Length: 246
Figure: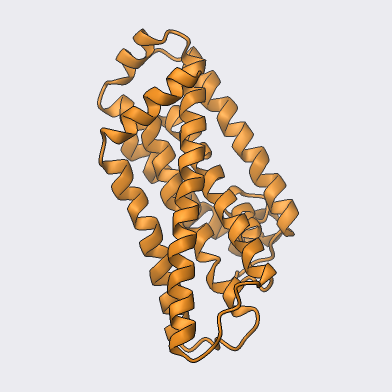
């Protein structure tokens, strides 16, 4: 398994598109935090630091696409055949992809956090307000956001294994987040909280989340998201083992 993980990391080092995708994560976080502070938010509000750092979790959309590319990208470029011929135990290959993608998702969340904290601290200083590095609510929000990034990377691997079309998988994932969960959230708020993106929002939310529908408590969102992560991981392995390579 260690060899397969090293192979997956080697593949990532030779392809630029996943890294360009992940490079957008800290940019999104920085832009979101900058927009929140410059739009008139009160930096004296003790909950504001936690609220702006919720953008770390929202960057999980990029790690979701990263996970999709880990599998669907190989199907698109037809390299998956060589991969499976080199390692006939497909379950191990997909497991290695899950491990690497989850780890990269967590690291991406950490990088976005560092960038977000630097931007937030600079903006707080620019407004003459001391940035509270010991804000426990902020750090809890950050931890949830990093976990959300890691979980969505693993879920992305599952989606890529199920759909296999790179464009189709990304389109389906984004449509689910933007349309399905959004519509359900408007129509049936009590049910929407149990869906993946809403569970991630609960995990990476601040004490006063700025959402349009009720969320689960943080522990509940984390539990639900963990269940989805395991489910998609199992689907990724079983689907890859049973399907023929197109």
